[in-house]
Length: 327
Length: 299
Image (cartoon, rainbow over all chains, first blue to last red; front, top):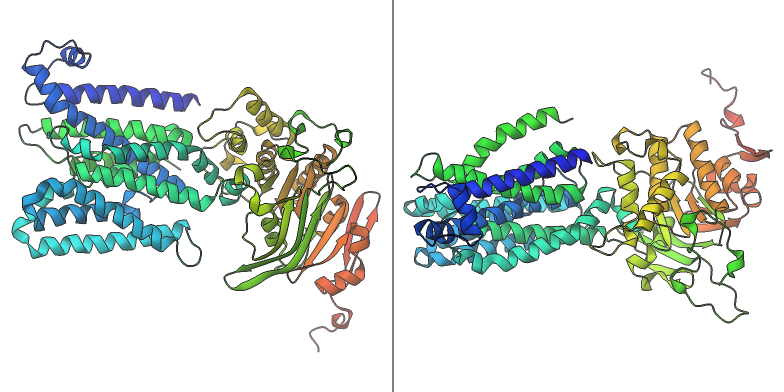
């Protein structure tokens, strides 16, 4: 218990540091104290306030929300499917969202504003197809069936994406940023469209924490306690699909975060109890994406590196090191 | 409805478990509804008929053991009455209420189901697991109250798992884990506890411990339903034995009357008899048919 409190405290500190750094650092460096004043509404109204409020704050909030969403999506999927490989990838969301975005970029380059909607729509469509197949026929709703249907759907949509890129190679460069995954300083506009999907996903995930803990003791114990195991799995899938598709709509494909953050949190806290793992994954994901995005846009400024590959490069060694120490 | 006076004085966690959900008493002369009455249960799984008209009854405060050969449908029957297995026919009622009309939350207040072996999540302690067993008493986002924590503590103490209450589930032996599973069921504070082959994977000492625990729960006022493989164990612990064979209930009654040599021959196809001597029970089996005795390698 003490170890988990320690992990929570460390995550909160990391989150606070990452948030302030994300707001303070960039082409113009703003002292942390001034950032905090601006956030508290005590800014002097100068250009720094403008930079923080209209350029950096939206991006920081996006990083925090998307990081938390992907952390939670991975945590509840791994819990619901009792499978350590589960992530938004395996329910097809990432593949679908990628296809939807590339479709807009390549076939309708004039309507690039539709990109988030395309990613969201195809992300959710892919997840719906996965669940429809996994919930039909015999042994419906089993974890194995969901994962296999998800991987099949991922392959299908990835093939579609690759096909589009191959057919229009001259337009491929503009698609790269989305595939790599990254945030932009484009204000509140995307968030204004997408936030309801995040909100519903977050509420769903919170309600699912306790049922997921029951499910961890097996379908029979969950059923003994009055839950319907298949319904818990479906609910977790829907919540994860909403969170991951909404994330992809804004920040492209950052699936790695959803896979790794819950594992790191579990290994650090020494517990797989969802009451701990889900909120800790939210904090960890938010801190990691905010920190990663800050580093990606400041290390080689003014060149912005896409945060996706950047985080993978940083995250994989850490992950492997923790994995080696785990049983 | 059983008059209050009939309620046995139990431990703290057993109080207010009788007459669950305020089921109204019928007219005074009407017999009280049984905790469980199931008739003509049929179950099909993947097109194959597993149960073809099985019956099962539980009376308050008794221990019922379901016995039968492998594949007879014992576990399926117990899962069906517990609401864990879809049925295709028959009627199941808990205290006079149709199983189908009970919501999951309400059913979770009537019976606890202890599986044969639950999966063991990493980094979860015994106390945390038993706390999860209490969650049927909480609202979706509600918090544990003092009485919930008391119930968890009482279940841990009653199942005899206090000694390793703070250890991780992954570090427990088979017998210890079975006791924890029973503690999870007890935390549900239901009047009926159902366990599917609770001793089938345990060694002799652990079996004795778990069997003694289950029997003593009946002394606390619980009604207990078990699937049991070991007939000598069933004879020792059960008030009533239900014999399931080929998906049907073929006999039910006191173990000594039901588990006769004739029935063992008919249902299990074995030449065997049970014996009882001062609380010790035994199963005497003609392991090798007489015709085969003495016919060695020479034949």
